[in-house]
Image 1 (cartoon, rainbow, N blue to C red):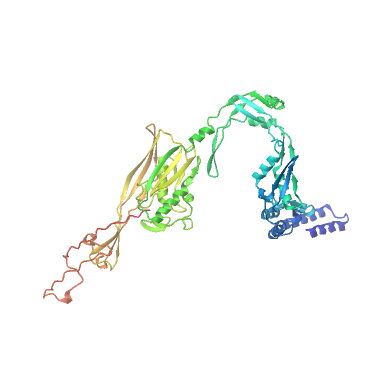
Image 2: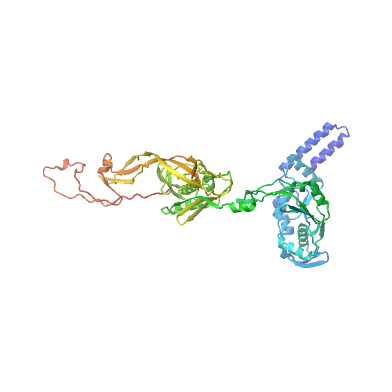
Length: 578
């Protein structure tokens, strides 16, 4: 950059006044462009930047940090110094202030100089650094509470905290409290002085000066606008996942001339008669209503679940528990529980794939969504999106389940009330209870009605296996019929129906009957075959002498029409929760 400046100066000097305004403008543009390129490409701390007199401009961040560590270290020397404040003194140990130098943060601040703002702001800053430079203080941490206690001790009876002119409202009286100036030790300056003393072993005494703080004159227009602002009810607001309450504002009618006269008075307090308008919703009232009632609740059981499935239920319950919805907010179950991956805590368990149960990651998460859906139904919340499973589930009444498929099938619930609501999901043993907490109208009752509108017979899927004895059938799945459910929500107030709402239709496919037979029995009706379970012992046929008329070559693979009845074990279907 110095080279660019030198070339520009030589260019102007050689021109000897002949250079036109256009030429100067062109040179200026070239110079500015050079600065812009320089600003965006320079990867080091900008020139002429110092820290406590140490030049670090032109260094990389690592070089500057190592330089500061070499000179200042990271911890200050432990010794005793005297602190004075006017005629008061106190001897202190530096280590009691927990002073620590943060070289990394110092270098980060130095590196950012000249790099914020737009291109022209950056260029202006670089020009300033080239001609003037800049020095920044060492960043350090200090026990601010201990420092304040030391200052308060040696400056006691000498500090006076400044007070702004304010006011107090009591019913129909407004008290104007006149402000005043003060005398205080600047805590930030005191910390800087303490660090300088710690870095210089020759310093054994520092002075904390008390600075005069001038009285802040009240702004009549600003104060009048604040006092006479329109009445405002207290309001709920969501901040960092927590519901906070903005206090109410009393409406006040006041003559501006009366306020002006009060501010010009030398009296420390002036009482004015005013007219007030009380807000309907106060902070105390909103606090009392917040999550006061259980609007709707539902409990489901997962006692027959595998440990993996139970873990998925508990995991999703924890992730939705405590979720807050402000009025108008929409809750997404799919987004709230996160990606279904091993890294995100999920495990493999039974899931519905089409009309069959298979193993898949996240099995069991739909029990939580279904339990929440049922609670939301009875809480009379708006259901934005809900889809039934492809097959019935054992833990929920037909029509009250809610399936989830990551990214495209979701349970969405809207807070259609005037108050914040909170989702509660609690697990006790192997029972999950989901509740909606908010404000409930005691006269409002919700009824959920389910009606079967269609039924579907199951199909039979037969496979062949030579390992199955001839004349037997192995039933791997008994199958189940399917059906369609029409659901509605009936809302009554004081016994009268105020709303009848159709809910999403639920269609459950028929689960096919799955059976396996010997290849020789592929055409034999199931009712003609005996039940078989793996491992059962098949009795051998009795050895009886063949008739003389029988010839071995005439024996076929066809079994005699009459066979001895073979006892078998009763088939028990294992229920799989999804």
